[in-house]
Amino acid sequence: MQPEAKQQSPARDRLRSLLVSALAIGLGLFHLYSARFGELVAYQHRAVHLAGMLALAFLVSSKSKGKRHFVSDVLAILSLVVGTYFVVAFKSIALRPGLPGAWDLVAAAAVLLLVLEASRRVVGPTLPILSVGFLVYTYLGDYVPGRFGHRGYSVTEILEYTSLTTEGIFGVALGVSSTYIVLFILFGAFLEKTGLMDFFNETALALAGRTRGGVAKVSVVSSALLGLRAYDTQCGAKLFRRNVVQPLFAEAFVSPWFFDLELYVRLRALSPDIALTERVCELSLTEWKAMGTSSLRMWDFVKVPLQLSQIYRRYR
Image (cartoon, rainbow, N blue to C red; front, side, top):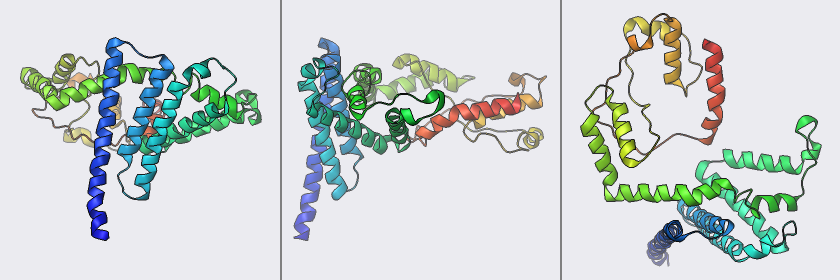
């Protein structure tokens, strides 16, 4: 029996991969069709987008086999069922504002929990914890003293606002994701798979890669060719003369995240009468290889304003 089970497992994995591919292709075609011929009603369009993305998130994030694999499949199916309910029952929900039915509340609670779980799997626990904290604050607002207290809202009111209107989960953020961001993702995937992205990058590198400030120029040219407005040039090694190393590194840095920025601020504080352009020289890279990995976490974005303010207070 064990050899037979081992033979069936790859077959199930292949079937699972085919279902993921079919779902992703179908969702992509839906968005391309909507972009060309017009969208559904906003709530319905966003429900289709959210259901498909949640199902993909659960299917793709499940890497282990066995029990968790089964749970992920159930959550993916539940995401599609709940999304289908919102699409089908949209008119009845819209005609009963403030009077949600029992199944409306069940679907609302389900999509809220599904979004929290998908967020936990994809970006980590920080964002779901913050969301749950604000939900608890919304429910227990009458127990909060002072200016931050409020009358408090019932579970029904919270579920209706977050899941049955276009103000909560189905709000502006999901609307932008389902109409604009998803198209840019599809376009980027098309460029990557067809090799056009490498062509644009190589063209930019050939035009400006060996000139002074070439890294920044390559970023500008590549962004222009790809139609992007943002690029990142904050990478590379740093070399220092011996006479500036000791004063620059005499004390611990305030922020491990804004190391580059704090270096410049500290250098300016050490020599306020000398322009940074006279003390800093950029040497362009002739080759750059993207590794495709990142150590960014949601908590890093929370720490950004705090660390910037610490640097400002330290060196002002």
